[in-house]
Image (cartoon, rainbow over all chains, first blue to last red; front, side, top):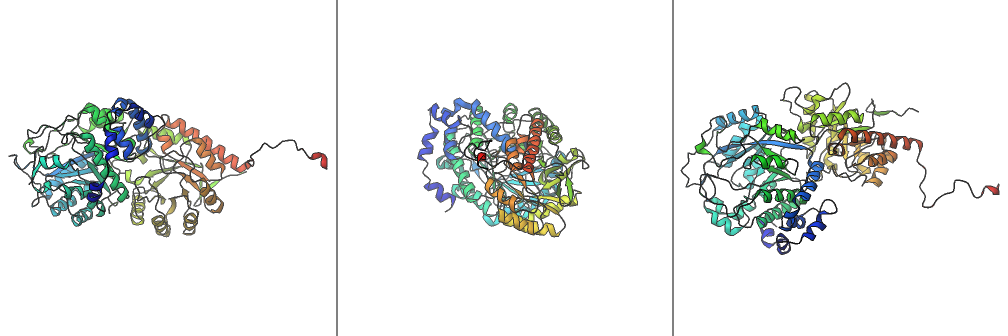
Length: 373
Length: 257
């Protein structure tokens, strides 16, 4: 059974009622005898309003569990944009087709120059990002870019339009070990309201993409929702957890991680449907950690410095630094091209200093290029 | 009485092995390693960056005269990947010793017995000293011994869980049957766990998380070291049998002679 079929048939009534839990006793019972039981039930309770009163207690547990399972380390990565060409109309995104921004697609030489720059800065984990353009950002194009950067990194991830399984297989062959793909929102209605035109309108095709990636032998898969798109961020996140849980059971060889991107300013005038507060983000991170102890948790430069600093030791395992969100932005910055403004603009040395001051080690490399497929 | 530990012909001064993952920095790691008295120190190959300048890798802090750096293949999901990794380490100038870890399951990091046996055969033939990480499976342990592994390293519990000797009964069988040193690895969360493994007759133990996640890694390393020695000594002396009732130390039937 595909995830789509399983997701459509999934009875989430009990989990959904947990999301509204106001009963503090249930939370206390859950956390008063050590680590709570792993899985969806715990997750649904830990993201409830009742659990928001126990952030400190949850943080203590999460911190200890993170040390035990992941160590006192933060892995560093950098994104590099390949292209901002896009054939979709997404009301919230700076790359949306209607936006009259300059468009740019890197060639192999320009891509390699970005790779060389980031490698010299110390990065060994790279995330290649692009807009979604069926004619320009094809899997063949992405494969070419992957090959041009591969020698400079121990791990290469992609965040692009969803591809077919055979295309993912080609990408793995080219040297991709990690697939990052956010459903954006699991709420079908909201999904169709914000994705007006283009292939991205196809919710179902996107939904089954992580499974296609896993079939194609991606070693690591990173998932998430774009917080602020759907009014009910609790339900949206729970649905992401349902997806993750299914993936873990069906593709047990894959190493999973999640990201918690929050909508931020871009070149559109989109206003988030809901304000997901810093406290909410922290609660979500603690819930992910405690309900899924082995999960990697990423926090990007979209988030402000104070929050990123505070989250070191609370559950986060991966951080980006010094990021540019425009194609070619490291070697030739032109702010007209970027997808969104980053918030944490500190350089990587500052980030490392903060990580170390919080008794953690900044890790550049945690993968071998031979570990593919 | 001499109680030497010899692995693949090399005399090893300590029965306590330590891992280098998860520490907050090199200083904390080094203080734990020094306090442990360990000679064998494992390092994950995937963390090593041979492009870096000397001084920027974990192993640069470890004096090769003092420690035997044992590279591990964690991250490898197949025999082929593990073999490539081991060769990579050797090509980069590391000793031809390898802790063979193949876990396709990134969640509990449980080792794949089939891939491990395959990789062990290849690596032994290529002249590596192979120390395989395995589930506590006595038959697999014998098969690995037959292909020429230097030790077997059965797990006490999943890596990093600190649950202690969950696989005790199977480890007892492995110890009873083995002609090569048995290193109990993974899951030992407290000195008492390590002591118990040594009392049972394990030749060595390997600990990492319990040290790295402690608020005092060096203190904890020392505590484990003492426990390992105590357990070994108790094993050599022979533990008294356990009974369910008290047994009188003065015999009650001595008048019968």
